[in-house]
Image 1: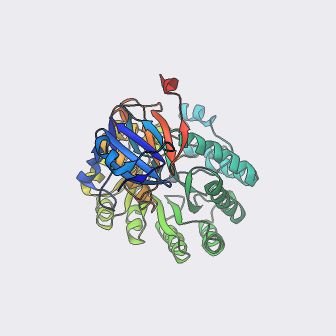
Image 2: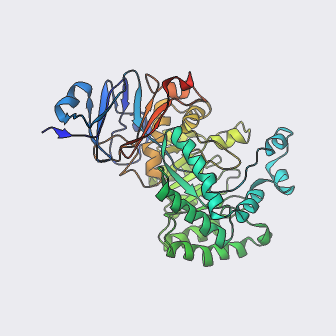
Image 3: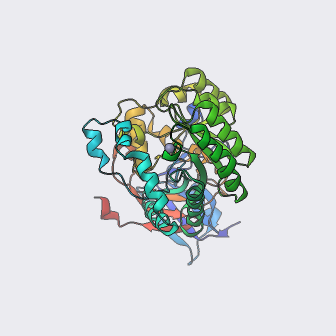
Length: 426
Ligand SMILES: [Zn+2]
């Protein structure tokens, strides 16, 4: 039976459906983009109504005078990017630290002269709710322009109960008022604030005893994250935080083994984390456990890039070992990028990932990493119509033409929310 539809995107040179089993993709599955050449997508009531070749679609749906039709000839159509790891909420910026990094100053040296994360914490504590909202809103506008349609956002620059709650309330308000869909993560255990210097257990007591119960009761976060690292939070302290979060209904996430092989990867598996991030120094056993438990490895290649490091996480080894891998920007004041397209390029050039693997990692696997795969991450009937159109004849152009923006049109929940002039990038 033919049915009336609101939007029809037709005849894409490549339609990447990412169709597949409803689970995070691993190994060879990470190569499967579900490409339909000459593909068309029909949208009805904000949802994907039909996916087929251009010849078939006319038999399935009815185009009326009210239907918006977009001709995608010569273009690539795919699901909107999902960015599953960002530190969206903060005030200020740290562009001047680039000079110090170029002079060879280490992160700890920059921290010791009042820069780094503690500077952002100061700025964030002083910023009111509206200021935090406005800063984040602009970032989300740019992310949307780059084709991201769902974003995970963490608190973590308050490091005191009041500002952590305020940060999460800003995320809630952004989710209600901005076109972007946001998923909130509580990261009170991001660093040790100066007032608890030398007393990390005291700060963990505050996170576990005061922040988590309040965040839990207000239902402000779906996930609880921790920065498990040497001289920050130990494996034991991280475990306390994650288990306390779990008691209040927050699923564990973790920043694991970024600088030192501490055992955060193994902890992720032990506490049933949905994902573990960074993983620069993860052990072989930890990686094997992640594969067995299906813990998603959220890799953030922008971070070593911004830190001017030569080493990147071992994505190739992780994929071959069976870990479901996702990509994220890790957007934060020390890694300021809004572009998942750039992450795909870095993943290919510096981590040995194939373009198809990097696209799976930026869409369906990223959706699994934030528990949104039932709604987004692929172009399949019944899912939210979050679709992007790229001015490129095939998906290989995404990493190939790095550093720019190939996204021409963004459809969010069935509505065209970004429509850029065709000539703007030429
Ligand atoms: Zn992070």
